[in-house]
Amino acid sequence: MMDWTDRHCRFFHRLITQRTLLYTEMVTTGALLFGDQARHLDFDACEHPLALQLGGSEPEDLAKCAKIGQGWGYDEINLNCGCPSERVQRGAFGACLMNEPQTVAAGVKAMLDVVDIPVTVKHRIGIDHNESYEFVRDFVGAVSLAGCEIFIVHARNAVLKGLSPKENREIPPLRYDTVHRLKKDFPGLTFVLNGGLQNNAQIALEGSQVDGVMVGRAAYHTPFMMRSWDTWFNEGQIGTDLERVSGEPSEALRFEIEQQMAQYMSIQCKSTGQSWLSMARHMLGLWHGQSGARLWRQVWSDSHLKDLSPLEVMQRATLARKGVKKGENEMGGI
Image (cartoon, rainbow, N blue to C red; front, side, top):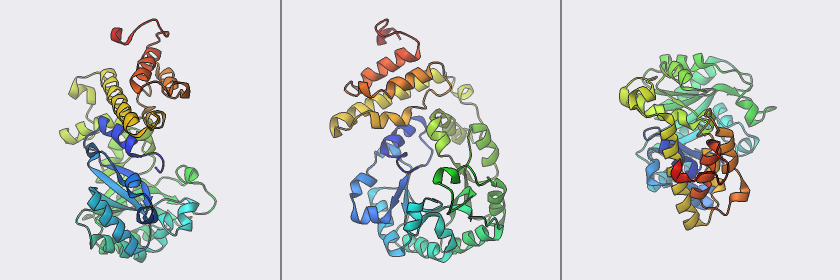
């Protein structure tokens, strides 16, 4: 989710769900050790619980960055062993690390030696065309011996040559049964299922067989789906219907979330000089599936409105969503 789950995205998601564990974009060890740490690591306190996802392979560098992350206030350090991009491969980390389980184990141990927050690993179920269950089983076994207790498993192989990162999310077949089998073989470990989960019905089905789920692009493009997740936590039952429990219609909730995000963007624009356009892109799926959503998105994506305040843009977007022509009504009548 590089260039997606930045701090503005995470602030928006936190307006929807208070209990879901959020993850940063993957940050390389080199970027933290030699770059602008504040730019990569700053976050709003409301984002907790929050995990820092690292990309790297050198145990010493990973340990330094894990210690920095804990000092910055993160709740978890996650090592990415699943990204298949060529850029990551050139740095000898990401998915290619699954071919070197002892290297991953050494990195995990080095991090655990210097932090007292969880160190987790995100990985695939295989590399290229190796679909042997033993391959991923032995990877998990080796890394768990180093002290890792939580594994986030993207239930697809990573094809390192010939497929783009996008194709790697779509072409290799999903094999959820492999993750279910890992849970049976390692009952004392925590397994979080990732990959291809599109809606809450699917999450409820697959999540019941493991310890949790990680949802990326579906949550980004249809973020209101996350509103049910806190209810699931509170009710202790995946699949609980949000509106039945809360009694609140989704339109009122969506409007409140949009208003809070507009207020946040106004503050950010004044304090940093950053355009609201780069922040608003993260909430374009808020009204997904609702009447007027396309017209609403068009307003929030219109660069010609960049000089207006976010609250003024919200007013126009709301009028467009409700099918009101410009100048025909005012916000107070909505």
